[in-house]
Image (cartoon, rainbow over all chains, first blue to last red; front, side, top):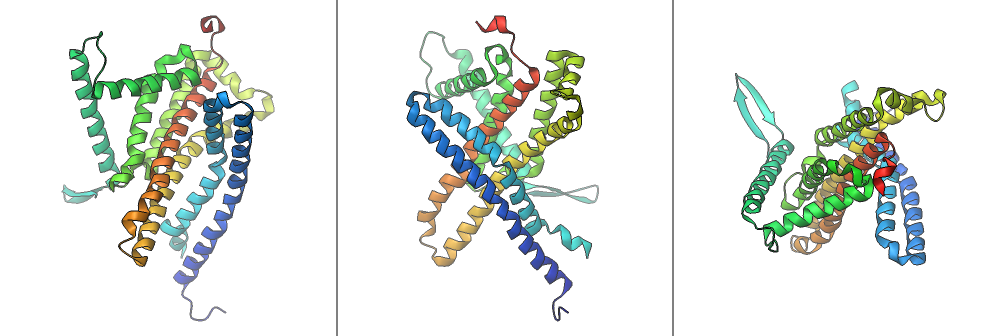
Length: 89
Length: 233
């Protein structure tokens, strides 16, 4: 069916598509971090004297929310640069 | 730049992140020795000057952080947290000097996360006793035991991947930006690149250091349980 495409090229192309699809997971952390930042802004507006504590808590929560995005990033990097699927040929 | 050498007829390659890690450890050791020399000659009544002042600021910031997160009775963790914080700051900012940051190697971050993991469980057993430690796995309900075990395994994995992913993505994005800018014009690169360095190396590196140290402290303090209440007041 696929005339003129070698196995390596096919696997590499599919790996690139997979890396692109994996990065769709960046949507979730983006929404979550934006929500946390909005709530943090609200809290600073209500209580400006607690700015340091609010910033610290907000950054910590955002970093934890980022975890799923980082997982997808690691998977994309592995697909692009380590190319584990080529070993199966 | 990695090091290649022959030993017993076999070629051994030492990866550049390991070499950079040694450089950082060497620099920090020299800093510590110099500060120690000056500290012995300094008198306690005078204001600290020069490098002593810097060392004092570092110690004060770290003590304040540990005190506010773990509580005043657990100040004995300050040296360990301080070591990790100073090493991570230097390692993350090493990319600014043109070296590969050691934390962009998964081995380094995994080693740091395993250290945190061992520390969590060792201190959990030490402060709650072995029975109290095992009881923690069956809370809040006994049938949640497998989920608790999975959560314990996930902690070091997420801790190490977070640091690794952030620093490695910064390195990759900086390489992409450099090649992109160079293909436009060699002359705009020195003016446009610092903006991206400020975010991907400086901001991201410092924030990830803070987060790693903070999560280590929170996890250890969580495992150790509540502070003894009579000491607090």
